Amino acid sequence: MVRLLSVFLGAALGLSVFAQNAWSADEFQDNTLALEGKLVQGGMIIGQAPPGSQVWLDGKSLELTSDGHFVFGFGRDAEADHDLKVIYPDGVQEQKALAIKARDYDIQYIEGISKKIMSPNEDDLKRIREENALVSGARGQFSTLKSFLETFIWPAKGPITGVYGSQRYYNGEPRRPHFGLDIAAPRGAEVVAPASGKVVLVHDNMFFSGGTLIVDHGYGITSTFIHLDKILVEKGQMVNQGDVIALVGATGRATGPHLDWRINWFQTRLDPGLLMAEPQP
Image (cartoon, rainbow, N blue to C red):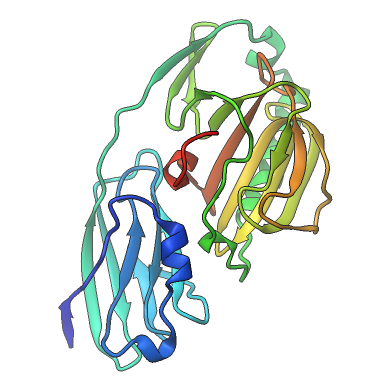
């Protein structure tokens, strides 16, 4: 049996309300699916279905927590049309067409980047490939942590100087889009964990990103922090939301001290700004 999917899509990301008011197994009297998030490019969606359900996005199976939560997201240039399929424990199937809204992105021009960084030599290119593999491996891990359900907090204090999706020109040359949220702060300013998780990558000096730290929040959601001056945690360490994990720096390809914070769903880059329920302090 297949029927129309019943879906709630929040106008904004109220992850704290969603997580705190999560249904128990006894409260699922009917086959019901709830989704919360923004159906836009860069958006992260958190869902909940009756425990024991199966969920697919565009034919890809999604892992569910014991209480039926799951998460997925859409990249910067995600296509408009996507399909969500659910099979409930009683065998009833539902499908929903998800329409993803396109966004306009800023164009930024940045001068003063060194020629060495703009035109890496063969040794540098080998190093870059090795570092990219480390980052990809860290982002590709799956864990059963449920910290992605927390209400994310700002990892640093300061004005926003760079946004997700913007196309950057370095010394007049076009480069790949920016996938992070840049927060300007003095060198040595504290960086805190925006949500709890496990440290899965620590690197003091990557070619492009300098001091680089990745924290796993579970079910494919990770936070990446780059250009760090100093990392205060170790790989494998568990951190709580609000813990000081690093210090702001200007390492790697950076023209001044700031935190570049990124959110990922496995290898898909999401927009951290869409997760924030509170304005920047």
